[in-house]
Amino acid sequence: MADLRNYQARVATTGTRADAAIDEGLRAYMIRVYNLMALGLAITGVAALATVSLATTSDPAAAVATLGNGKMLTGLGTALYGSPLRWVVMLAPLALVFFLSFRVEKMSLSAAQTTFWAYAALMGVSLSSIFLVYTSASIVQTFFITATAFGALSLFGYTTKRDLSGMGSFLIMGVFGLILAMLVNIFLQSSALQFAISAIGVLVFAGLTAYDTQQIKEMYYEGDGTLVAGRKAIMGALRLYLDFINMFMFLLQFLGNRE
Image (tube, rainbow, N blue to C red; front, top):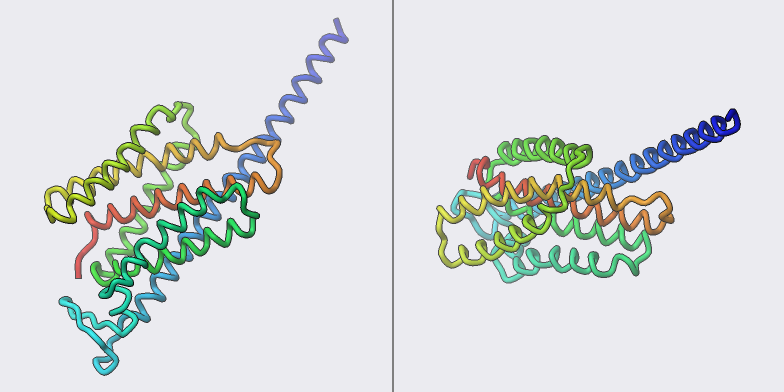
């Protein structure tokens, strides 16, 4: 009987140590995901600010064009925002994110990280135009509101015991519906439809933040090698990055003060 109790105690101790090891590994994995995402957002912000500073000027002698709100564009600004090059700037990040998604399993860890950084920088160049439309104060304010909401939603997705997988397909269908509605509104130019798109967009990406966090957490496996774990962390960071950026853009349409 004593031997049986000793065996049960050893099994319980081993199980506790294994659980602790998994918890430590999961915590390190999630911290890596959030760090990669945060660095991606920082790169996007720096790229956006650098681009708009080079694309605009306060010197009339250096201006090539003037916008309706009084902002003056340099030659670079005219090319980025007023020529067919703007379509390249808009679509390049989309092409790169598809490339990373489909090729990440065949890429080295350094190549995957470099592609993610390049994507974040291109996204910054693409998003730099918001500084021509909205005031800097409202952009900063919306960013911090988004960060607060994102943090709360991601924490919920990480800690909840509820299985969120059932809402995943619904949310993804919502994303496709949003894309279709935005394409239709390019031709309709309906303010009511734009308001509905923005409201639904905030809700969809709020839900995706919690859902993706839970999915990223469940992707963790203690036995993964360094390469596999690194790729998972990069793709997890990319998913959360996209959730943050999209939620920020839809919120900006509500909260942003136009120039």
